[in-house]
Image (cartoon, one colour):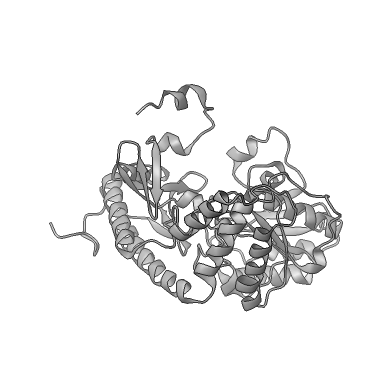
Length: 428
């Protein structure tokens, strides 16, 4: 198939297609299909934008019908029936059962738009400029989001100093040798520390791009309590870990905390359509009309599919229970693989999980071997030392087991260390 146009005309900034050179023509459920008829099992899920798989039939038909009947596509922040339906459904299905009260803001089409709005609002509400974020964090590619991102390569792309933010240690950054938050508590209490009181702290409960480091629930609770004592806003970036990716709709639910601001995107549209929301407590809604806006914040196609996805998957706990069983299957499979590779450890939580290898080059080799076996799998971490496993939440059990087996074979090919047969390996 012709691919010259991609190589000669498209910028070299592209990345995923460099590792996966196939031309993908169709997609359905957990699979993508190439122009030449090959089928790939997708454990990438659009970097978390396709939690419910590719082209879910009911969402697809709803979308086609909406477009065929001249439904409004673009509306900025104007009122439409599709926006009303999304807001009503989100309140009824997500917020009310969790006793959560938030205002909803549509800041623009992507996760970084949600983060930029959160940072701007925190500064406006508190009158303070500084934001604290964590080691190995990733929050987006625009300037505000980059300023709270840890990855040095991505930060260099800004081309200017990234200011008004500082990095503090994420959970277990010092391998348990230093008590959690001892430095932060001390400098906030000490008027002579020289550290400006921040407007907010932004955190991912699982660092999707930073190596799948997963914060403990007690660590999140302690962070929330510390910030509340010092009247500092807590921003949870749930762009990748949210919408069920870790097993519950919000990734922080198990911790029992109530963030001041929540950032969401990726799968909030339910269909992979560009859409983002920023949630914040009602008392923080101090915006003036038009103070933060954007041309593409009114994606009615996303409102339509997003509302129906919430009804289909989150109206009761049945889907969450099914997901819990699949998460256990994935975790057991990856644990079994990791224990056969010296020094390998399991990372992450839920369907945002993977294996960290002691040799940083191994993860890339495993991803390449997986691609050879028709499985899409990416890497994570500052040195790409972690394979990142993100199947659709709706994956069939047989396909999940198939993918785990491919990963096992890929690890064996990449390392040669799995000398003992695992429970997943078929008899020879």
